[in-house]
Image (cartoon, rainbow, N blue to C red):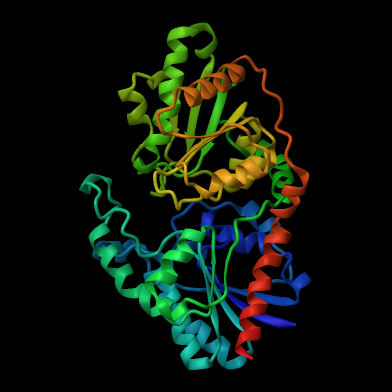
Length: 428
C-alpha cells in the first residue's frame, strides 16, 4: 500500500473550511490503496471555532501527529497572526523527523494556510518525496489590487507581498495540483511554465452523508438561532463586500415584494450566520449594513460569529429555505454547496454568471440558480421563489441521484487517489 503524508494545519476539532476535504476523505483512502497519516497543529494554537463532534467522523485508525505553533497572544503584537507562519518551523522539525524514520510516497498539502506549501519544495529537495498542493482558494492574487483600501483584507500590504514572494518557491517545484476551480489551475500554469505539464485535477469538495446524521442525533445541544414565527431563508458562511452584488439582488427583489404583496413577503426573514473569520465577538458585519442602507433592517439578521459545523448542519435542516450568494470573483467556489444539497431544502443561488458553482448546482437539478446582472426575467423568477417560500408552497428538492453519487466524498477521494497514482507513476 502506498503511503501519503497529509499537511493539514486546521483539523478536527477545529472547525475550518479548509480541512473538510481531508476530513471527508480519510475514511476512503485505503479503498484506493493509499495509507494516510496527518500532520496538524495542536488545536489550542488556533482561535477558530471548535466542534468536538467533528472527531466522531474520523476513522479510529488514522495516525495524527500534532505540532506546536508560536502563541498568537504575543506574536499578534508583532502583527503576526497567521497560523502558517506561526507553525512553519515546528512543521519543518516534525516532518523532517518523520521522513527520516518512515517512507512516504507522496506529501499532500491541503490547506489555505499557503506559506506551509514552501515546505513541500524543501522536503522534496532534501528527501526526494514528491508533493501535491490542494488549491482551495487562490494563493497570490491580484483581485484586491484595484479595490479601495477599505475593501481590502486586514494587513493586505504585507500579505500581498509575502504571497507574491513565497508562491513561486512552492509552485515551480510542485508535482501535482488539485483545485476546486479550473481557473486556479490555468492561472498557475500560465504563471509558472515549469509546471505546464504536471498532473492536475479539478476536484470539488465531496458530499459526506454521515454528517447529517451526526447533526440530527446531537441537535438538542445546539442553540436555536432561527425564529419559527417566520419563514426563514438561511445562509451560513463567510460574508464580505464581494458578495454584495448577489445579496443586493436578493434584497432588491424582496423589497419590491414588500411593496406589491406586503402580507405575503413580510412573513420572510433572512439569516446570514458565521459571516466573519474574526474571533468571537469581534467580527465586523458586512451584510447588515447593506440591509440597513436598503431599509430592511427588521427583516435581516446577521450573526458574524462562526458556529460549529454540526450546529451549521442542524440549522440548515431547520430552515425553510437556503440561500447561496456568490462572490463577484468568478473563480470563487464555496465549500458549502454539498451540505446545502444534502438537506433537500428549497435552494436559491445568486452567483457570478461564470461561477463554476452554477454548473454543479444545475447538475444536481437545482433550478433556482441565477446571476446578479440586471434582468427583469431573473427578478421575476427570484420574486416567485420568495413568494412561494413565504406561502410554504415549495417542496423538498429532488436531487439527481446519479449526480449525488458522483459527487459523494468517496468518489471525490477516488479522484484524488487517481491523481496521486499518476504522479507516482510519472516519477518511476
